[in-house]
Image 1 (cartoon, rainbow, N blue to C red):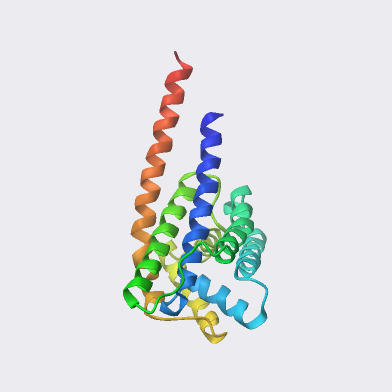
Image 2 (image 1 turned 30 degrees about the horizontal axis):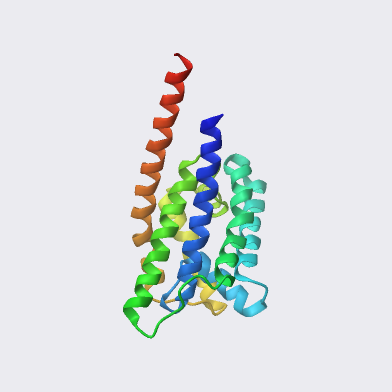
Length: 212
């Protein structure tokens, strides 16, 4: 029971970190955003509503497609991810607690890399919690299964298509957009390992306690 509660705590904390990191990156969007955020920003700039609302809409669309093709990677965590990250991002963007873009490039780069790092840490947290894959991850895993492509190739193809659509709609694309995955992936992997190890340690302690 204690381990389950901690998993959910880690999952929700990861979502908060993920939303915060995305919001920080949006503050300096002219330096480039992740392909999915390029699409969300393009939809927001063209049709209104909020950035978080479009994140939810896109996430739920991916969940629906994955459900129709294969429900293997869809569970409660997938829906929570799709529904919560957008509002969390909107909260941080509208709360005026985040730094704004500066006239100095190095400060803007610090803000952007802080956002990328926090997003990577958050992603590692919620994936390590084992509550469920995010809608975008679940969609790419489904594509990989159905096409026989490796997960990395499926990710590259999907994100390239998303990036092209976002760019054509007027989303912010710059050099960092093409470096995003290379910068964020190592941070995500390290975060995932740390929190997965922590969960395994707690699980082993619980097993020992049960036998005492």
